[in-house]
Image (tube, rainbow, N blue to C red; front, side, top):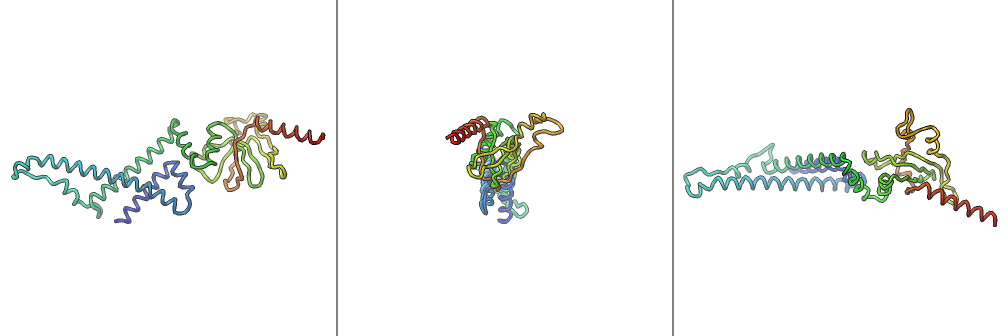
Length: 262
C-alpha cells in the first residue's frame, strides 16, 4: 500500500513540474537526487492538500450526522445515524476509504494545478512573469531573458573564439531547451588572438537588407539563418549595442593611429 502511495505522490509531482515551466527548468538543472527530491516535495504538497480535503469532507459528514442524531438524544427509540463512521469501514482496491479519498483528491488537485499552469503560460499577460521567474534562477538565463524582453542583441563568444551577435529566439523558453540557445545572427566574427577584441567577418544585417530578407519574406526569411549553439560550447555572453560597439571601435582605431604617429 505504501509503495502505491509513494508512486502516486511521485507521479503527481512529476505531472505538475513537467507542466509548470519554472519548476521544469529547475528540475532540468538539478543534479543527482535533487531532481527526485523536487518532484517528491511537490507531490507531498499535493498529498497534504488531498489529506486536508479528505479530513474536511469527513468532518462535514460527521457534523451532518450529529445534526441528524439530535432527535435521538431526546428519544432513544428513534433511529441513530452512523454513516460518518460507516464510511471509514469502506475499502476500495484494498485501501480504506480515507486513504483512497486522499489519493483521489491528490490526483485531482495535481491535474488541476498542471492545467492551470499551462493556462497561465498561454495567457500573454502572465507569460512574462513566468519567464521572469525562470530567469531569476540563473544569471545566464536572466541576461538572455533581458535581451528578449528589451529587444536587445546578444553577443556570444564560443570556446573556439568564434563570436555571434544576434537576436535570441524566445522559442527556447517555450520548449524549455536548456542545452542550447538559438539566435538569428546579425554579425559574426572572432576574438583577436592577442587583444581578444571582437573582429567582425560577416555582416548578416547588411545581407538581409540587400536581399530584402525579413521576418516574413519568402522563400527565405531571417528564420532560415538561425544558429543553434550548444551551451557547453559557450565561453561567455553579454548584451550588445551596435552604437556602443561602433564608438568603442572608433576610439580604439584613433588610439592605434596616435600610437603609430608617435
